[in-house]
Structures are given as structure tokens and as C-alpha cells.
Image (cartoon, rainbow, N blue to C red):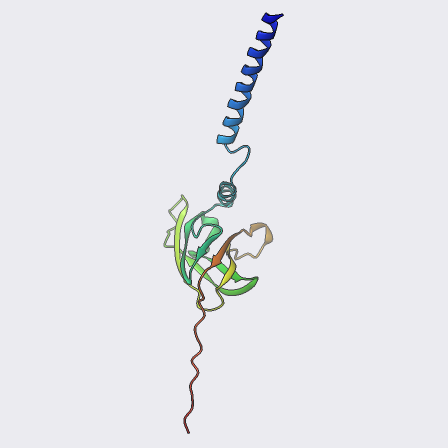
Length: 164
């Protein structure tokens, strides 16, 4: 009776070790409990886009840079559009430019300095859209980067007093 009990204990310990090693392997490969940041980067790569700055959910000021790499499909005539929303309201839009040539086959680097002068305070979102000159929905791609503007970027009004 003692021998069979010892055998069961050894088998139970081996089973626990196998389960622990298997769980550790799955966790390290991101199969279980994926971190949100890793998921966002994987989704960006599927879209042909890798954003390096600003990071999702980061705090940024009035002047910041949008940078990263994108596949050629994001560009038309070396640019693609962006839109900045704060508290659900569009406050700024423009183009992100790159100096690539048509011989480049890899991901194309881009970096654009943005100066948000008005309305940039609070929860916001940067929307990047691929250049889609055809306007066809099947070619449209976009990426949303949630951010928080931490300083007021409004230009103060100067009140002039008139003297009589």
C-alpha cells in the first residue's frame, strides 16, 4: 500500500511540473495573457505600420512627433493624412511626409513634428489613415493612437484696451 501511494505522489509531482513548464512556455510566447502593448504592435504590423512615437496611452505636450515605419501602401506621393481628436472633437489635421523613392522595398520611415496650438488638452486620439486616392473602402486602412495632452496649447487672447 505504501509503494502505490509513493508512486501516485511521484506521478502527481511530475504532472504538476509538466503543467508548470507548459504554462510557462505558453506565457512566454504570448499565447496566454498577452500584454495590450504587444497586441497593439502585432495589429499595426498586420496593417503594414509600426508606430514608434507617440506610444499608445502616453502623455504628450503641445509639440510632439509622430514617427515610425509604414509600407508603401500607406503613401501616395510620399504622404498620408493624420487627424487629431481631443474629447471627441477634431482639432487638427494634416499630412505626414516621407522622403522615400520608388526603389525602396522595405518599410518606409517617417517622422513629422506636430504643433497643436488650440484645443489640445485632455484625452485625445491621433488617427492615421493610409493615402487612398481611389476612395474605395476595401483599400482604406487606419490606426488610432490614444494619447493624453497634458498641457494647454491654446494661444491666449490678447485684449487690447482702447484709450480715448
